[in-house]
Image (cartoon, rainbow, N blue to C red; front, top):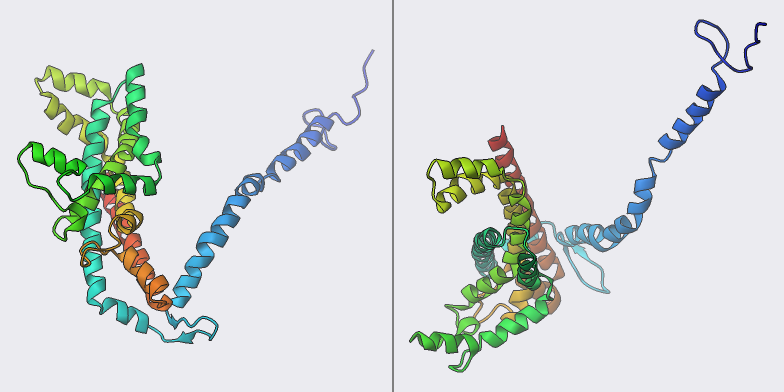
Length: 318
């Protein structure tokens, strides 16, 4: 006996509407496609915070850089006068030089020390995990605590901690952050000590992706440990070096807290950097327009450096 086709069922070659299963699948696909907004819903709180606390103040600073800010009296448009004042200031040029020197020293020092620490602590041992955690502590300790710790160690008298160590090797006491000739280098050492563990963790993640067969081949060819590091490890970490260079350079150009807490730009302006100068112009001297112009110039310099590194990296990868 021939069975009648079920309602809504469509056979190949037959006309009519799609089967009930296909009709049910289409609304389900449409419902999935309609959930494109779900990730944005989760991102919305963070984006609102960024908008209110970062992007709106950035837009306000850009506007203020073209104005003479007069609280309660109304701002007056002055065009590029604030930028002319900043760029023509000898104090700003000195601050830029100090910032560049400090950023270059901290970037090179933290990356070199971080690579050495990563090579020494590479592995899966339980003890190595504990040592890596201990070495990472300077990154998680608040910068105010770090600055106070190094202030104590930099005590300029003979019974200071570091001066006592220098006395053991027959060297005289140093003024460290209290002397114009050594203050910038002392802050640089503090920044390297705090930034190197962060670079170490990034290098450790990068070392996991280096082909171990290259080490074995180099060892068979008679390469020493240093030669294996230079010809195998360093080329394998090229992308990691690029990322760390950008992060460390931005961190160095925007250095503020350690300088502010250790020396506040002194002695005699020997450690004045762009961020401390902007702080003094804007909040201490109440020249908010000039300070905003300096902040915009610093942002432009950071953006140019980042784009330049990306372009160089892209050209090398082609």
